Amino acid sequence: MKDQALTLLIKEAKKRVFDGWSDWRYDLLKCGICLCDEKSAKKLEKALDILLEGSQENYFPEYMKKEDLIVRYLLHRHLYGKEDTQEELYQNISIKELRIIAIKDAAEDKNYDEAEKLCLEKVKEEESWHYRSSDPEDWNNILYGIYKAANNTEKQIAQAKKLLLKGNERFWDALKQIYNECGAWNENYEPLLDELKKSKRTICYRSVLITENERMRLLEDVMENPYDLFYYGKYLVMDYPKQIYELCYRNISESCAQAKDRREYKKVTKKIVQLIKWKGNDTSKSLIEELKQTYPRRPALLDELEKVEKRL
Image: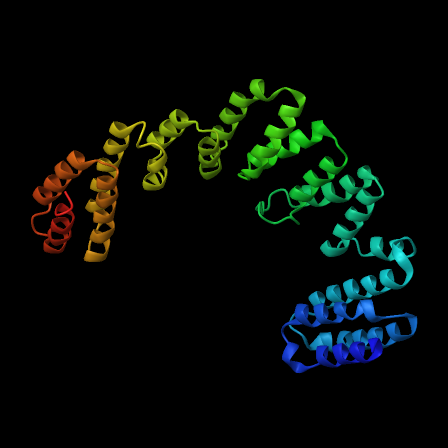
């Protein structure tokens, strides 16, 4: 049954439907590895040879060569174990998928220095690249995992702080846990917030402020930069209604000045509706009157304003 299943997988992987979708083709062949013994493995390698020969006609032959090397390594590892295939692994360490395997192997063997070295090589190489905070296989995220596994508190803190200041808010909780375990959270709390503000990672900073219930800091930041005012306003309007109403008044006035058609006028009046929901009726009345007087020749705007006025 294993042999029949392997034959079927190879047959399907060869079909032209996978032309241009090499990763799916090779993923299908990877599924056949667990079915192989030394004898049937020759059948899989033969299929790989045929695909490799045809790779020259592909638009991305180097990509197919990389996929070929990954499948062959995984096959050999399945047959002979990780120790006997380590040389092959390191010969192709430039391939991301294989480097990650080498890092995991080193970490499992508690060889954290080797895992760190393999990871740092890529971190330094790609330092100027965009940090992919949500990708668990981003090298910076992997590096933090190594320090955590090694229980290296000092390097954990340094890496977590680096990634927090790159805008990854989940490392706020990581730092909080580490510092609490060290009994050093209170002394690091304010300086860490200050550093995060200076980093200009607005969304991350404000998310942390909301989590920590730092409403005054959040208000100060929103007043400095009213980015996404009507999202953050809901966290502030109960405690600081006057300031939020004033910010909304200014924001809506500016939005209306730039609006040119009914669709945009509706966006403006939607903000006024939100202001009314926040019990800013007086501000809304004054605003509507001002907009009517300022733009008397915009019938579409006046029509939308009258609809909102009925809510007051």
